[in-house]
Image 1 (cartoon, rainbow, N blue to C red):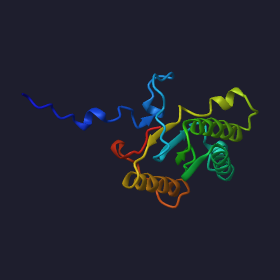
Image 2: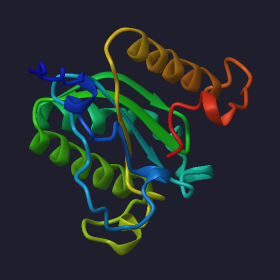
Image 3: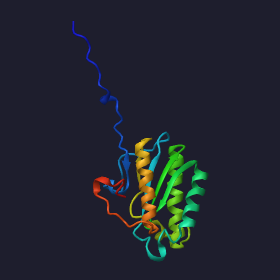
Image 4: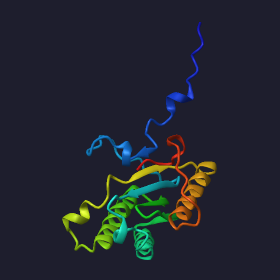
Length: 177
């Protein structure tokens, strides 16, 4: 009589990706839902090539951060870190639910676009402010969270000119939003 074979843990691992959006999204209509975690922090990147010169996110840093923190409180999202790099925003967040995350993304992206472009609600130019869909990545607690936090700090210091910009190799990038 043959004994039953042991099941390997690889069979039980989640097949869902940790990255979603930005350059990872090949078409505009994804076939899968964005992975959202309510237990682990998420790295979120919003990028716009229109955000330069007078429309730079840095020029409106105080108002942009006010929008983010106000909407986070209203939507039930905890913001651990926030970095404004001029043409893109980095956030490390923890949503309370998928619905809270969706509400937060929609409100923040719309309000910031309207703020920067000085557009009215529903204006077509505000819809086209962001380059691609927001990039998100689920972070592991510990080393992964610390590396991402340090990356946000470095991004902030480079944006404000406290340290010189250091080009990153593709393998070292946290995101390619």
